[in-house]
Length: 155
Image 1: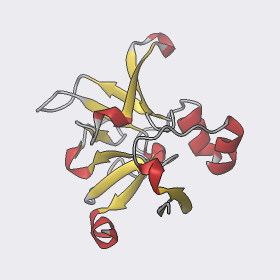
Image 2 (image 1 turned 120 degrees about the vertical axis):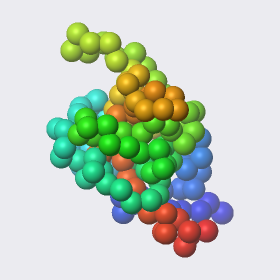
Image 3 (image 1 turned 180 degrees about the vertical axis):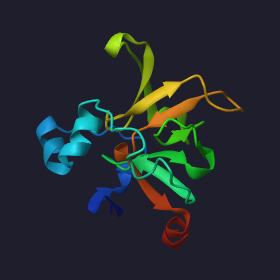
């Protein structure tokens, strides 16, 4: 029997929460995501700074990929970078995130993608706080949040 949990109001198989790769067609993604989510998550877009729901959010819990539900960041590693996007200094599991060189717009950056569904999350910069000096700069629209109290109730 496969357990089911809900992310973005949609049922997601328990196996997708683990490190199974999720392969869907772009048409399937278009049907499942809002147009704004599709632009960012599948088209590598970026939401405007200071507009996302999580850039100034301080509740305790975990941040998950909005496309597939993969667990990405813990609120304990979130900090205010002043950039206008949610920023974290560490991922929950480094294997949950793919880092790729991004040379768009005549810049050299590290693009962050969800390892489970290959969706665009944001970028990684070497200007973060201690202990590692990293800033995972992530689009709010690429994330879903699960409150720590909700997580305790589900266990």
